[in-house]
Length: 302
Image 1 (cartoon, rainbow, N blue to C red):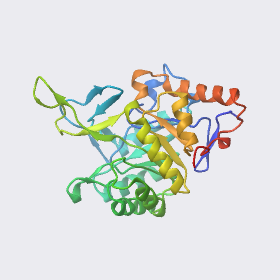
Image 2 (tube, helix red, strand yellow):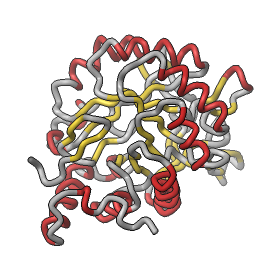
Image 3 (cartoon, rainbow, N blue to C red):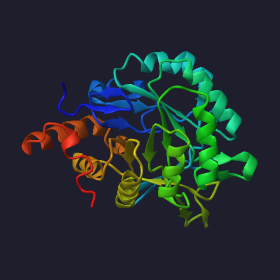
Image 4 (cartoon, rainbow, N blue to C red):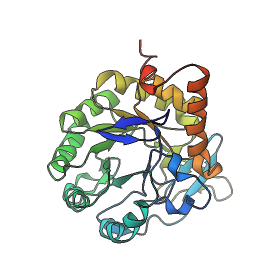
């Protein structure tokens, strides 16, 4: 048994460290340089029922201690993923999370039905997507809207369903409780914060859509606060993410109550971040006589 081994929604993972969606491709992109067998899981590129080309114009913009992205969920579509990317992911070792988005509930439902017939380990439901039938307001803003889409997707799959929460929700704790009540087996948070940048030479917003998503170390203390709040409120396991770049960062989230963590933006500046964080957690545990992460999970809750 690995020192860092955990159980997440009934499945055993060798590490609490999972590569976050949108930052690790489908895993094979890192397979030549990273020891993937040290990772607990890989959350693949965000999928929609049908493939998308993504946003035009600038897509990435660095900020102090952060990264703003406006990718627009470019992806090959659920069916293409099932036929092409998933078989390769299954050979890599880590648990496979299929990150599923959609512009309407019907797309979410059909995507979940298709994924339910595969051997993915988890479905990670991205409710930060804009609801095209409600004027583009993200499902993850209002708890009532989130509860509806989670409940509808829950009815379409028996896979462990982990709902990824947006920090832009009106009330993150209310949102978490609504998703739990609708049948979520777990929660992951936080997704990116809404942000923007202005190009001084062009004298206009950098991104065609004006606003985009901020990630990286700049958001970590706020993400940690939200994870702490949600862990205190719900009974289902929580995956913490938001600016995690070191083992100490990851341990903070675990002490706040997280069952596991996801690492995203750090992969771009350091492709070995996930494996180094796993090693660092094990080293800290050994140095402090901690034999299982259960001993420290949630210990900072007061």
